[in-house]
Amino acid sequence: MTSRAVQYARFGGPEVLELVEREDPVPGEGQVRLAVRAAAVNPLDWKLRSGAMASGDAPPEPRVPGFDVAGVVDAVGVGVTDLAVGDEVLGKAVGGAYAEKALASVRTLVRKPAEVSWEVAAAVPVVATTAYRVLALLGLGEGDHTGTTLVVDGAAGGVGVMAVQVAVARGARVIGTAGEAHQDEVRALGATPVVYGEGLAERVRAVAPQGVDRALDTAGKGALRDLVALTGAPERVVTIADYAGAQELGVTFSSGGDPDEETRALADAVARLADGRLRAPTVVTYPLADAGRAQDDNQHRRVAGKLVLLPT
Ligand SMILES: NC(=O)c1ccc[n+]([C@@H]2O[C@H](COP(=O)([O-])OP(=O)(O)OC[C@H]3O[C@@H](n4cnc5c(N)ncnc54)[C@H](OP(=O)(O)O)[C@@H]3O)[C@@H](O)[C@H]2O)c1
Image (tube, rainbow, N blue to C red; front, side, top):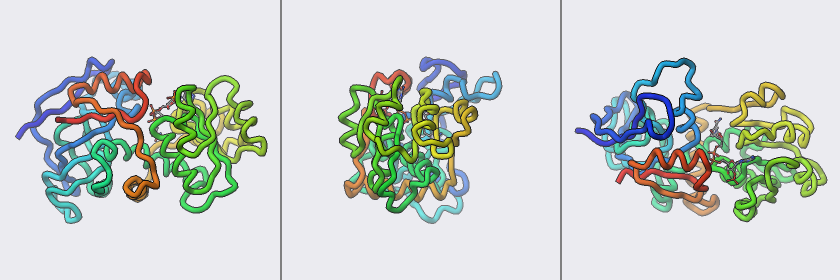
């Protein structure tokens, strides 16, 4: 059987993405194949596509972008006992999510509750697992963190929206930065909004005269020095988007975590989405064939929220 997928065989702009008909991927040991219902766009997708993260000059083998996926199990690989054909799941794809059929390792999947839409299900795996991981690194893991003040730089972004809500639910006071247009959105998440950019430290001090305990940089836009100054030490800051700044200042750069830990985090986030303890991210959908436009809109912030591709 064949099905459609978006792929690229050379690095470059969104124009290198093409919609192709390909043989359905075959699930390996411990994997399932999903009939994809929704796949989300993350900044990593267009960073990889651009070649900016490639170590050599060689063009990639034809590669299907995307990690975040939600769909229905339509084939199971050897050794899979926890899931069966027809199960509705979400998680991270192996070998690309921008497709009608995608593979995923069972250990990274969680079941999709009926209360969570396909679009929202696809929108959460990367941002939720990242948010939980970095909060733990900041000492704001599961438990009560009343009395702790956290700054989240980039609070209206995919990761930021999750990190703010989870930290607030754990009792922390959160100060979230966003552009002028997204101040109300950050407030609605339970954080104190401030505008990002030049003069950030002064604006944060004005709303947190008692000081800041921890800071998370989700934006990678040059705020690390301010965040270290606000918290008083580089060990109190984590970034997921500024590798060079982290190296220079002694701040932790976090990327990737323990897969089982991430699956537990995802299950917790999904349970909270299902019963309303977490607000679903704002989702904007595109047809699969418009993956290039969706990536470009995300890269240039033309459209806010999580951008999600629908295969049909
Ligand atoms: N290391 C990891 O494990 C990991 C995991 C996930 C993501 N990431 C990286 O983390 C970054 C954010 O990902 P995302 O999915 O949250 O992206 P996103 O949804 O595109 O959000 C980006 C956010 O950055 C904000 N922003 C823009 N300019 C800013 C500035 N000068 N100062 C502060 N914030 C600014 C935007 O705010 P406004 O909309 O208000 O302008 C927007 O909300 C990306 O670089 C991504 O590659 C890393």
